[in-house]
Amino acid sequence: MSLRVLFVNYELPPIGAGAGNATANIARCLASAGVDMCVLTAAFKGLPRIEHRDGYLIYRAPAIRRRADQCSPAEMLSFTLGGMPAAMRLLRRWRPDAVCAFFGMPSGPIALLLHQVLGMPYVVSLRGGDVPGFMGSERVLLHKLALPVIRTVWHRSTGLLANSTGLADLARKTWPDAPITIIPNGVDVDTFAPPNRIRPETPLRLLAVGRLAQQKRFDTALAALALSRRAVVLRLVGDGPERAELERLTRALRIADRVEFAGWAARAELLAHYQWADALVLPSAAEGMSNVVLEALACGLPVVASDVIGNRDLIENEHNGYLVAQGDPGMYAEAIDRLAGQPRLVRQLGQRARSTAEDFRWENVAEQYRRVLVAAAHAGDALPRQYASEVRKAA
Image (cartoon, rainbow, N blue to C red):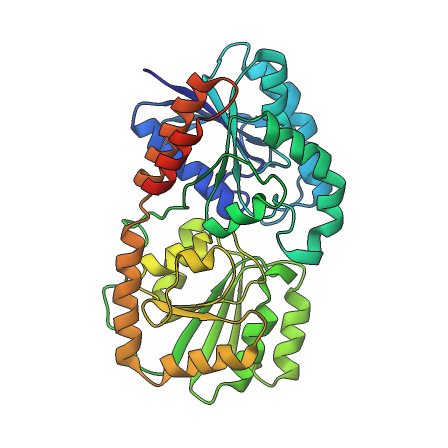
């Protein structure tokens, strides 16, 4: 059957982070495969209200957003409120067979409205921060306030999608019997590739990429660098509310001469940073499935990451990197020094990292989304559990 699909996400490049990138790449691949695609996203200064990109339609709803790289809960709510009437206007001339809401909040209520008013089936793609319990105490109040809406959005859907086994397990703490299909994130292995050069043996060039916020715990990376006994330099790519404090910490730890704050980078600029580096460090307190890790693996970088959900699906100790106890600078320093002292090991882990990434091509991810959305379009009320199990095994 010909398939017409609406994606709803408050973020889409050039605004947002990993989930926006996933939305754009899955939409691109589905459009290339013949699916009639539209993405409903948030308006942002300078961007057209309607745009055609990579074979799919982008329809931007009124919303408040001050910065491309971050979005407050109030700004997310503005997308929910602006996106509801925008979705109804869009559907007067373009009616999808199924809807996929990226994030139960703030995108889920828009999909729920379309289901309640027009009987349109939808699935919810869980991304991490929208799942109660993710990031521990940092979002506990927000999750508590939003829990009635989250539960309603989940229960009225035809099924949930999770990008890692750990995230699926966490979601089941809120809904034990949830029909969840595990579909991982993907990576553009043609764009993100190792550099055509031999990486120098010293110093070890360590890269960290992400929003400079509490969740990412880049303070742990700085503390590890201060404990390191090898020649190691660190480049931080990103911006956010913790930047001033992190800069102060580098001075307090006397490592300012070994740390570069590169600032926020557009997606087109990230490849150069990955190809500059010898290894990636990701000390996050929580992750769904990190696009940054996948991109680093594709570029042949060993990854030193916190042993949390999402990372466990990508990193295997001493195979393509190291999983380290979250919040332990000493263990991070030990892993970093192991890499810094063994250039041959860096190259071996990097080759295996690239091999890992090959299994996560966006085309494979998009095909799994297509199967789920076809099933949702036919299912009406509930995604068949047998089908969900089959897709989960394929993932």
